Image (cartoon, rainbow over all chains, first blue to last red; front, top):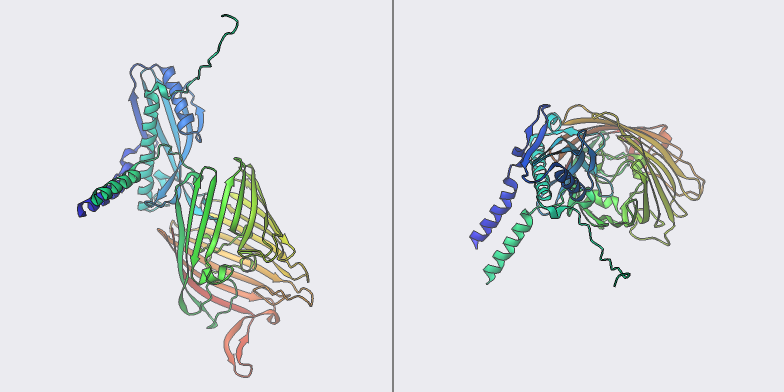
Length: 192
Length: 355
C-alpha cells in the first residue's frame, strides 16, 4: 500500500518537475524562441501549406492568422493562460505570442516568439481579467518579475510551444486531417 | 481486491492529472475549475487613541486584527458559467447583509450569443471604484463613496458587447441594496455603459435607481497611462427617494510604481452630505448632514510574491466643527466624552495574501 502511495506521489511531483523552459532558445534579436525544422518526405509545398492553414483554423481557431510576405507561409498571433495549482487552478496571467509557419517541398519549419506576459487580476465579479497596461516581454522581465514567476512562465511557454508543434506535426502527416468534402449521393432519374 | 481497485483508481487519477488537453488555446472562459481568494490582517493606530474615521472595515484601534478569508470558485462549461464566493471574518460581516452570512458572490451566467450574456444571482455591485476584497483595492482603508454606496445587488442583468471598446449592461435588481432577497419587489433598475476610449483607459458610467433605495449616478474610470503610472477617478451622487437627502463626492487615485516591488498611491477624496428635508432620517457615514470632508490617504503596496504589505497614513478633515463626528484624545469629564475636533489621522499596516 505504501509503495502505491509513494508511486502516486512521484507521478504527481514528476508532472511539476519537467523543465520545459529548456525547450526555448534565443534568436538573433535576443528574444525567446521555439524553433523547429521538420522533414516531411513525399509532400510538396502546396500540400504542406494547405495542411498548415487547416491546422491553424482547426486547432487554434481564436488565433489571428495573416499570410506572411512569402506566398503560402503563415504568421499570426495567439495567447495562452499561465496557470498555477494542481487540481484546482489559479489564473496568473496570459502570454501573447507570434507564430510563423513556412513550407517548402518535403519540409517545413515553424517558430514561436515574442512571448509577452500580462498578469491577471480578479475583478469584483470573480472574473480573471488582464491588468491593463502591464505587458512584460519575457526576455526583459528581470525588472518586473521575480525568478519563480519567470521560471513558471518559461516552463509553460515551452510546454505550450511543444504542444503547438506536436499538433502541427499530426496535421502535416495525416491527409485525414484535411477537411473532408462530403460527396453528395445524386441519383439521375432521367436515365434508367 | 481492495488494493487492486485503489491502484486502478490512483493510476486513473495520475493519468487524468498528467494528460494534457489538446486544445491548448484557452481563454478565461475556457479555464478549468478556478480558485481565487485572499486573506488579510492589519494593525491600526488612530492618533486620537480611539477609532474615528467611519469608513468601512479596519475598525479596530491599537490592535492586530483580522480582515477576512475570502474564497471563490468559478467554472465555465460551454456558454454557461458560475461564480460562488464565500467569506468569513469581521470584514466579511461588515460587507454582507447580516453578520454570520457568508455569500459574497453567487451567480450564474449564460452567453445567449457571442455578444449577449445573461446573468442572475447575487453579485458585487457595478457601482463605484473600490471593492470589498482587499485584493481589489490599492488603499487598505476605504473611501466615503465606497462606504455609502451599494456593496452588492441581487438581480438579473443582460450585457451586450457592441465592440471590444463599448458594452452596455442593463438589469433589474432587488428593491434594497446588499440583501439576499427583496423586501417587496424587484424594482431597482441598473445600467452600466462601459467605454474604452483608448488602450488601457476604461470608463464606466453607472446608474441604479428605484423607489426604495434611491438613485445613484456614478462615474468610475482608470487609465494606465504608462507601465508605471495609473490614474483613477470616481465621482458619484446619491439621493434618497424622498426628503432630498443623500451625498455626492469625487475621489482621484494617482499611483506610481517606483520599483518592481513598491508602488505608491494617493487617494484624495472630497465627500459632501446633503441636508435633506426635516423629515429625512437618512444619515451617510461621514460628516453630519450639510457638512463635507476632505480625506487624503497615502499608501504603499510592497509586493513579494502573493503577499502585499500596505503601510498607509490617512488624514480626514471636516469643513466645520459643527459637522464633525471626530473626537480627539482629550476626555471631558463634564460631558463624559472626548472633545470634538475637525480632523482625524490614522496609520494602518495591513498584510494581504492573494491567490
